[in-house]
Image 1 (cartoon, rainbow, N blue to C red):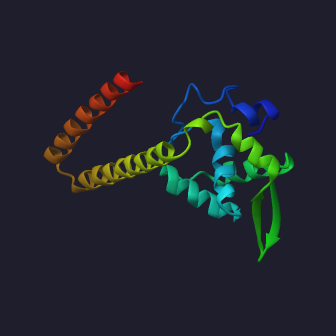
Image 2: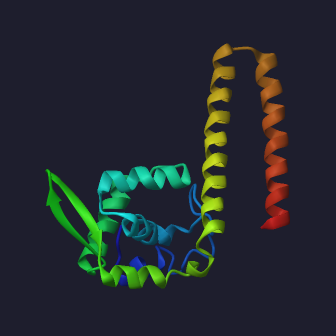
Length: 170
């Protein structure tokens, strides 16, 4: 829920994502949805659903309409984007003021190939996480106690290894 400019500018915790550098499923903090939207609109005008699909492509997880549409409304209210009806859909375009805000992005200096590489790595990793969940569900459906024990051991080792990586690079 939007709680004024502080929330819009810094996220729900009053910071710029330093505490949650990878947010939920993507390479950015929670307060950076507006920048993701602005980046997408810098490429071309789009409607809300198309923006959601592009964010899903980039970070491997689709944001909810309950987060995208209020963010678009806030950006429009601030004159960072302009919305207009086209073929029954509201299409948003980046304004000059939106381009300026995009330049202010905290990690703007890191844009380019590194950012694109990170997006691809995050996307692939999240796709693997979903595939692991699907495999675990299939093992559970097999109703084989032995297969489920083996899967549990693999998942436990994987969890420990992931935390070791986090400790090393955290």
